[in-house]
Length: 518
Image 1 (cartoon, rainbow, N blue to C red):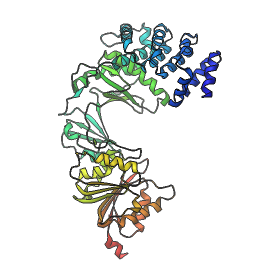
Image 2: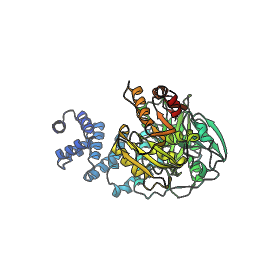
Image 3: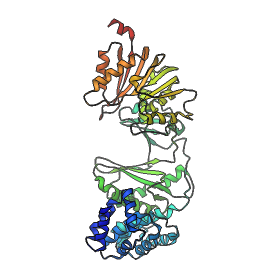
Image 4: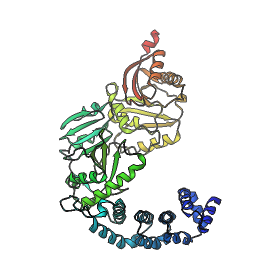
C-alpha cells in the first residue's frame, strides 16, 4: 500500500513520472495490488487522464495502459478522445489496447470509420502485387498495420460470429497426423483408406476417410498442408504476401460450408532462430499484413479462433505453412473433462495400450495403482473390454476428477470403474487381478531402485499367476533391475517412448512357477 502511495505522490509532484508509471503498471498486474491502487484513487482518475496530454509519448502510453487496467468505464470518453488526437503511432496502439478491455460498444461507429480510412490508404493492387512503394503506410510503418489489426478485432468482438462447419470428410484432404516420434507406424497400421507415408513423428495421408481417421486414438495432432505449399522465405512482409498467393482463404472456404463470415485465425510460429521475446511482434506483423491482403476472408484473433496457421521453420530458415482446424471435430477423448498437472496425455495413454494390445485379455480384472484422473484405465477399456476396473491414488483431487470423467462416459459402456482414494502400498483386495496398468510416479532422486522393488513386491500380493503388468516409467533401468532381482517376474517387452526423458513402456509377466524354482 505504502509503495503505491509513494509512486502516486511522486507523480503528483512531477518527479520521475515515466519511471513511476512503469512501476505502477508492474505492481497492479497483481489483482490484489490493483484493488489497493483503485482504493488509493478513490474513483478520481484525473491524475492519470491529465497525463494523456503529457509531452512525453511514453508517459501518455503508460497512463493509457494503466487506465485500461482499472477496468472503469468512466475513463472511456477521455481515452477515445485522446486516441483520435494522438499522432504518435505506437501510443495509438496503447490507447486501443486500453480501450479493448472496456465496454466500447457505443464507440463502434468511430472505430469503423477509422478502419475504412486505413483500408483505403493501405489496400494493395488488385493483382496482389504491392505496387504502391511510395505508400509509407504499407512499406515503412508497422504501427498502422497493427492499429488496423486491433481495430478489426475490436469491431468483430461485438459481431455475431457464424461458426464454420467442416464438410470435406470423404475423401479427406491431404493431411499429416502428428504422432509419437518413435512410433508413427502404430498409427499408420490402423489406416485402411487412402495411401500413407510414414515419417519420423507423423503419417502423411492422401485420399483418406476422416470418419476412419478420427477414430484412431494414437495420433496427437492433425495438420493440413496448404495446396501449392512450398517453403517460404523472406521477412514478415514477404511471408504474408506469399501466404496470400497460396489462397488460404479460398482453401478454407472449399473445406467448409459457407457462412458468409471471415475465418478467425491465430498464427503459431515454430522457430529456433526468432528469439522468444520477439516472436509476438514477428507474428503480429505477418498477421496484420495477411488480414489486409485477404480482404476480409481472414481475421486474426487472439481468442475464439477457428484456425491455427502454423509456420514451421526449416534448417535453411524458410518456413512451411500448415493449418490446424478447430472446426474439425475431435471427440476421441471427450470423456476427459477433468485433468491435473500430472495427468498422462490421452494420445500417449492410447499409444501405450495399442503397443500392449497383444498382451491384453478381454474381461480382465484390472488395477491401476497410480491412476490419476483415469486416462490410462479408460484407454485400456476402450481397446479391450475389462471387468471390473479399479483405480487407486492417494491424491483425493485426482480420484474425484477420475470419478467425474467416468460419469456419462459413452465410450466405455457397461464397465464398472471403482476409484479409491488410498495409498497403493496400503491397498488390499479380496481377489487377485489379471493385470496392472499404470504410469509409475517418479521416485525421489537416488531412491528409484528401492521404489521399483517396493512396487513390484506389493504388486505380487495383488496379482494372480500369469498376470500382466503394463508399466510406463521414466526410470526403466530401475524397474528392469528390480524385476531381475525379484523371483517371479519376466520382462516380455520394452518400448522407448521418449528419447529425451527416457520414458519407456515395460510389459512384465508374473510367473509363480519361476518364483517357486528360485
